[in-house]
Length: 177
Image (cartoon, rainbow, N blue to C red; front, side):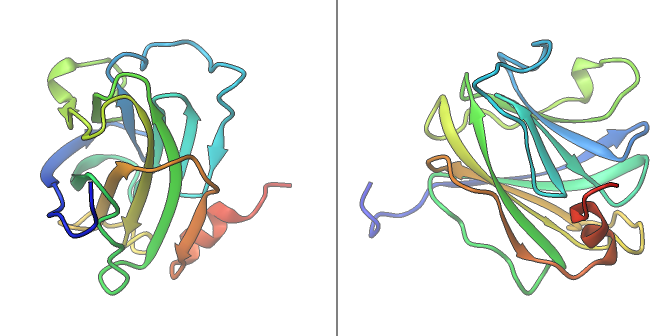
């Protein structure tokens, strides 16, 4: 695709139910039940996002539990970060073995009806970039538009902190003694 061609962007707003643990998961349709992680798929972390292997990423949210308003954009190229609208922004690489993913909150018992389908990813199976925007971490709030995830195809590269404002996020980045 040439850069002067229009971009394809799909944005979905949803309410994600989280029962405990303050996390939402991005899971690949074909790999989310795999135990452990392949040795050639090392875990990565950038404070607010932990990639736990191929097709598995956890995103920290501002509260421990509840109904979390969440917005996800799936695009065919980098949609651009919203530096003015969010306090904390990070990026990390993610691999989708199937090209089909869903978002679900941490639940004590699995419930297919609680999973939000984001599929298909626009380039099918392969390497993607996740950019996670958050605000309200210090206030432990989950208002509309406080959690925003962008997904687009991109080669694997280093994780990046694009913006840090909250004290909570700074604590996530500090190594534990």
